[in-house]
Image (cartoon, rainbow, N blue to C red):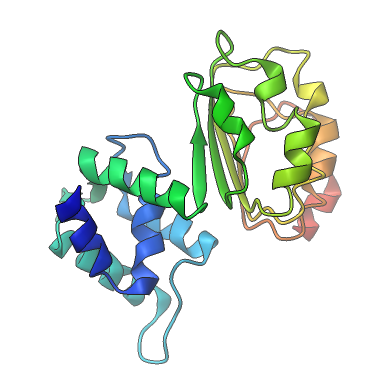
Length: 222
């Protein structure tokens, strides 16, 4: 960990959030470079300079993180080059991100972590067997009041939510959300939640599943 910290400390300040962001995905996740750059763009982690385009800047960031061995590159000359964090680097980044209150991961094995939601990014792995509804970020009114003003990225995956629970989910307290991912295997978004999503004026990235007959026309305002 000390060696990893040395490499991390020597990174330019503006690159540190980019590698911390990779740790927001589960360990051993191989991320396609093109997808990672979409996320970086949405999260505004890379800025365009006068000399280079945004795409060129992101390639420079990736090359730098790879050359210092913090990020592992795969299939670099193939059709879909990917990259991922070494297990120890992933662990280090999770610790660092939590220290800096940048993002937090809430898993079914540690539902009490939902009490610490002052981070800007929250990833939830929902397990219906071990995750009590009153610990769930979208259902806990006290948690919403504390975290809503800080949260700009919310991703939830895991087991399918019970049919009665989606009706109790609300997003109206998360007005600063820029990224929202409600993986379809977790829940299918109903009309009531769709109408709240269209009120998220800062939204830049949306990934949901729904079985409604039509999308509200107000979606064109996003």
